[in-house]
Amino acid sequence: MISAIAGFALASTALKPNIVIIFCDDAGYGDFGFNGHPTIRTPNLDQMAAEGMHFTSFYSGNPVCTPSRYALLTGREPRRSGLDEGGVLFPPSVKGIHVKEVTIAEGLKEEGYRTGIFGKWHLGWPNKNNGMDMSRLPLSHGFDKYWGVPYSNDMRNIRDYGKLPIVEGPYSGTDSELVGYSVHRIGDDQGMLTRRATEEVVEFIDGAEGDPFFAYVPYSMPHIPLYAGGGFKGRSQRGLYGDVIQEIDWSVGKILAAVKKDKSRDTLVVFTSDNGPWLPFKQDGGSAGLLRGGKGTTWEGGMRVPGLAWMPGVIPAASKCEDQASVLDLLPTVFELAGHAVPTDRVLDGKSLVPAFKSGDLGERPFIYTTRSRKSAAVRLGKWKLHVSNEASTEADKFGGKLPLLFDIENDPSEQWDVSDDNPEIVAELTKLIKAREASVKAEGTFWDEVKK
Image (cartoon, rainbow, N blue to C red):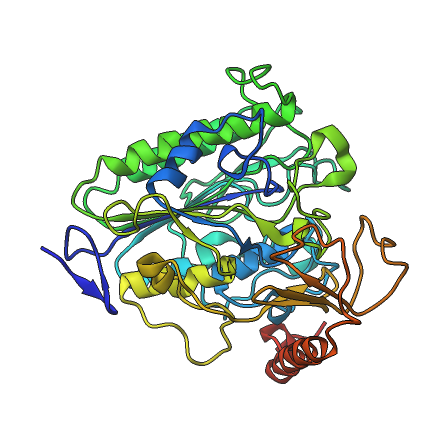
């Protein structure tokens, strides 16, 4: 039986498809075999690319952790969040994702999905500064189950917060540190994090028992400090960083094997990263390939990330989409596939990727690059990219402070040759796009504007 959901034909059944989103932390565009890395072996991800769609111009929501996760889960530009704490939340931070936001998990839960997150949350933490408000955590945002770390794996021993916590929920016991959650601290060896997250998500998938599920898998790695499980240490020619990526690849293989067991439903699996590689850490950081810059920058290497979509029988094998797409597009995509209406009482910045799944074509549309200080730094439309701000933490002085800068990204993906002086009409057109987005963000405000700071 073939079912059409919003004009898109699923392959095998009339049932709502399962959804899995795998989200690496600080993995670069060039860190995987399917994007050309010469020594890191990623056979499972390479096979996923061979069986699905490879997005060659896929973008994160921001060049740092917290805002990119907000963008993925809400389909909204990070500046609309009100999380104005330098871009990244820390354990003592007052704010978190606001309860009025609509997440992928909340929408899918309304459609009867079982929902779980397995890995790094990093969208808020209850602490003495916010009165131990539990609304910052996943169970308040549509997730039925949570296993993972609440923030980055280097945020241990900050002030009085002790060792890195592993948080699980829901929890109905009486000895919980947090209402509804159990918490235990781990020591200095984080080598179990990737494997344990994978085991938890596979158990979740196996336990679905015929219900549709949404599994969000934001791995803590390859964010520094790097840790690989015992079976992966020393296996990669790329050293410890390569070991970490190869363990993630092994994990993807385990997840794909688990979803293949359910032949009653189609399953969409998406693989990407929250931002580019953390270049100042040298060999402990990844690679953006031929792209300039990395994490913290709005050069291509900071926000252009690996992007795969796998849905056998629905998405054609070995297909490519060269049009720009981003994590902002995931909420409208999965809502369309699940038959759930997108919110109309707020601005969404993403668009459904279903047209790309059908034809590989999304057409030209602007993508705005925002900085950790919530500014519009650049815009891309088709082959053109205009920089109007430069807060890059790497290679910031390459052009002697000149702004604006214009690049032909198709001919010059490494952003080496500024052509702004030769194309004033393109500069003017793209500048208008940035001003329009700035006006939209200012007019809407944020849910946190209602809260006294």
